[in-house]
Amino acid sequence: MKPAVRSRRRFGDTKLLLLGDDAVRHARFGELAERLDPGDLVVVNRSGTLPSSFRGHVEKSREEIEIRLAAFQGPHPGDLTEWLAVSFGAGDWRRRTEDRGPPPRLEVGEVLHFAGGLSARILGVQDERLLRVRFEASGKPEASSGVAAPGVGALYRAGRPIQYSYLEEEIAVWDQQTLFSGAPISVEAPSAGFAFDWELWRRLRARGVNFATVLHGAGLSSTGSAALDRRLPLAEWSEVPDVTIQAIEAARRAGRRVVALGTTVLRALESAWVPGEGLRPRAGLTTLRISPAHTIRSVTHLVTGMHDLGESHRDIVHAIVSPELAAAADAQAEARGYFSHEYGDLALVGPVKG
Image (cartoon, rainbow, N blue to C red; front, side, top):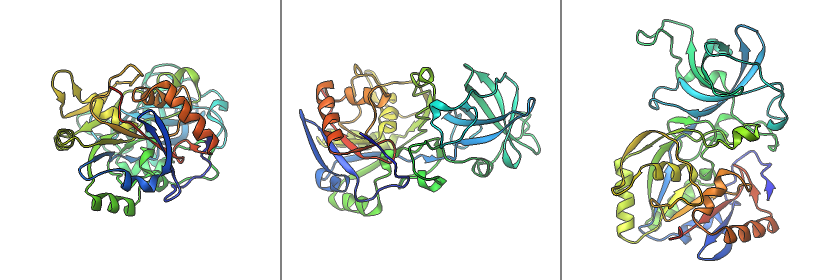
């Protein structure tokens, strides 16, 4: 598949690959309203995307450094201080992440400084590049922690959106928001929502299609290290409210489709499934990684982007349809010029295999 070189969302011309029922078909994403029926349910991720690339220097050595936030670590969306992050050496988004130089060596307790008085303290070093950090700010410390917690505005002023070298131009933070964006706990956009606009939403609602939400912090998709990439996705924070569970259960009882808009939605919902009990409200970190052997219980269909073989997204597709059908879909998508990556085309996968 072609890399997605566009750096803006693409209303109207996004392709939609239909993958399921032992067949591969092709449509446009704008036709989704005609492919869903009254009573079907679409579950979306209402997370906004934080500008999550921070360039600064190490306090002790004065070496330059970039960190990219990798996953929000809680304890709740009102406290954006603790994250997993990946450090990078020389270069910027125009250089492939795989080609970036080694970052400065860091130890627990060291402090990184960024623009506007924002700093980050190293709480843990899981290897040379994967860090646990806590953002701090100058000012009066909080009584409970002994450090000053920065407001969300400080993160927006100091950070830039994460982006990759296959894009044609620099993006802004609003380029990474979807129609459903709310609390900013994602470091990269829940990109299956990029192709949604208000007109499509209106048509779906007029047809009787319902919507529900989860909140899930979409994590970093590429670290530049093959060893680190194999660990993705990392532990990510999500919240599945009772009202969403009620909507899913009502749709399933009526024999309607339940469509997860994006793999983050699916991960959140599957993490909320309790054996013997079904879906239960939950809020907190999930370490679930959906493998081809995983039995999907929460939804009937998934909308996802076009991703390369070997990525965790591919494992999720193989949990829904057979590898043979997925391979046939890949071949057809390649022949028809589908675009991959977050600004690319989409696939509607399902129903899930029994």
